[in-house]
Image 1 (tube, one colour):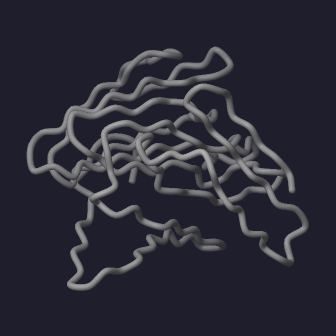
Image 2: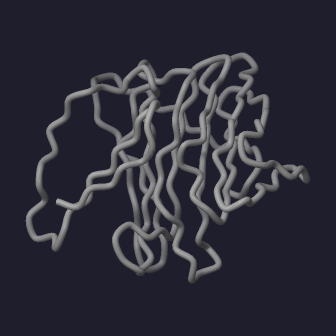
Length: 189
């Protein structure tokens, strides 16, 4: 999808409880994320992401939002921009802390992207929405391009206690922590 709005949402309704993963396939790599059940979606989110890799034209931080209500949903994104940059959307230039406002119909999606990390941007809506963030080419711990997309938990689903399983065979592991009251933390394990 390109920046803007489009009718791109997909509604999945199963007859038994399921786990659902969404995948994006690219010529040399792919990425996937666990879909959050509709009943857990909400109206408030904080965007986590990673630094954007600077050596490719596809390197952008992306936020995608899909409306779930069968009425018009008013969505606002309070931008967290860095490096005195602006974000252009629908021929309007937005600065840090400016608010992008869009109305979405059921299953309509909104995408915005930026050359810099959009982490810390705040999303609010009049009805529950689903939110994904990430980028096609980011820099987590080194200077190579990494695919990374995730469906974000709403702020009412955030918690204080977690168990992080290790993944054997990896050279290092990174734990990323975002808080509504503090800045981004990244720890190597």
